[in-house]
Length: 149
Image (cartoon, rainbow, N blue to C red):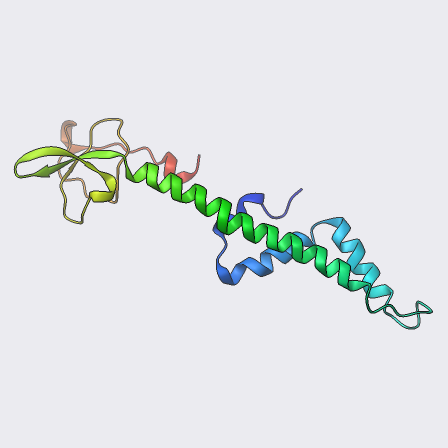
């Protein structure tokens, strides 16, 4: 059972990155073993010799893993997010301008625009429903994107 989901890196901030990343490193049994050995080998009454250099390779391996996760977070994941944002922002909606509904990209929507949303369309932003074509003015909304299903 994994305690931390592998995609949690997407949700990390600059402050929470290092603690969560080190926690992920110590969920690996191999890292725990080598850190334990590094501690034991430096206790004078347990081992006849003290090797202060033993923890250095363990530290280097853990730091390489942290740098790899940092690279994945800030280069690979951010690039995918940027491409996804560009794709989403290029979708179009109908906006009322000069008495006519014209097609506009989502990135060009402004506060106060009147947007026409047809049945089955994805809502482009936080909007206020003014009129509905349904009887009694009802509107049914699927929240699958918000719920994460």
